Image (cartoon, rainbow over all chains, first blue to last red; front, side, top):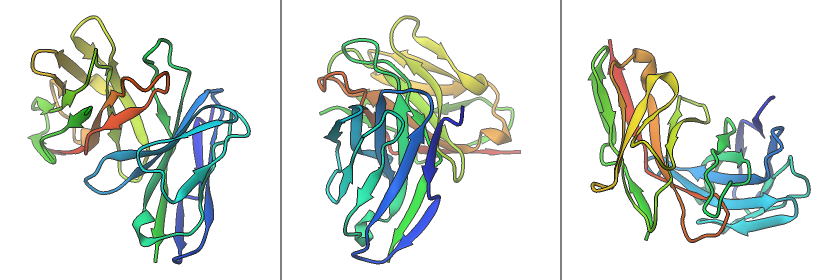
Length: 117
Length: 116
């Protein structure tokens, strides 16, 4: 298993440009997540998906969009890049939480380092 | 509001000495707690989790964590630190009251520096 893979590893964008961050997992996980990591701020949840065709907003969704057409893929779209979106982006996946509150571990990709100038 | 706090930005310890990385939490209901480690330019790797049962949880690479309900803490520990343990450590808690979504709240991270 490759686990969770993300492309690209690095990207520099100009203000106003758009791009898609790719995320693929081969563990047949139902649940997938996008986080951003800013220095000294921990990880913030952008969007998540509990299965193909189902997505929902996390803590910091503004400026981003997602889609989930297959179980394996969960791309993150930036439509109009802004300097505030300079960050490291992590995709994660997990099995469906086993109980009403969920217990399962999230597995993370290697990240995409994005700079918006 | 549910939250996780890691009160120390950095912890320094000599190789061979015991280490502790602190985490406190605030949640409604029973907490599901996690520790992750991040090596430079890498994604997060799962270390251990507490769901229920024994308050002392053992995880990967010789790490363990102690759940203390009265102090709302979940400190990460290791009896003898290695230089290779130097990394960024995150504590996280499962979000309650959000349905079956598996969402996590992360602390801001603690950098562990182990010196030879």
